[in-house]
Length: 191
Ligand SMILES: [Fe+2]
Image (cartoon, rainbow, N blue to C red):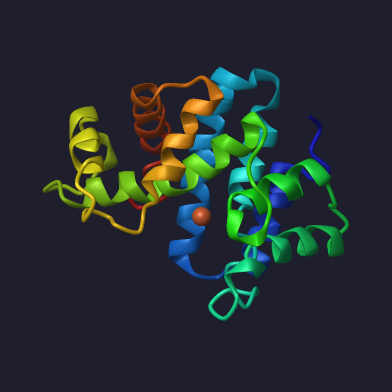
């Protein structure tokens, strides 16, 4: 898949529409996990998958999602079109990470994105309980242990995270890919 925009253009777009530091680092983390997943699932599309991750929350600060959660996703797609980067595959992937907008994940790319989104926040939450708060310190088994504690990082949607298995990647492989991918860019995401 050839992206209509380069990674650099995507990053510029992200910074044009999203100012909050936490949203930016979250976007980078999801990008990293998407790239890690693409190495296994779509080796020719690593950049493209990364960009889908990078831009999945592009409308975080512009869509009126606090009043109507269904706007989260479609507004990002609209921004892409308005900016001249309309791309139905990318727009659909971004919309399907929020099924409440009426689009459900159906493709490998879409299942990867809906799983990578909460996984990034979950891994970050696990890192925060380590003394050094570094993702590099996080052990595979503590991700598994905390996953089973429903009250831990309750906002991270377990059901969405498990959608990874629809891509053929197991839950255990997913943990390793997420830890490895986030560790590679730890400096950029404050972990
Ligand atoms: Fe997100």
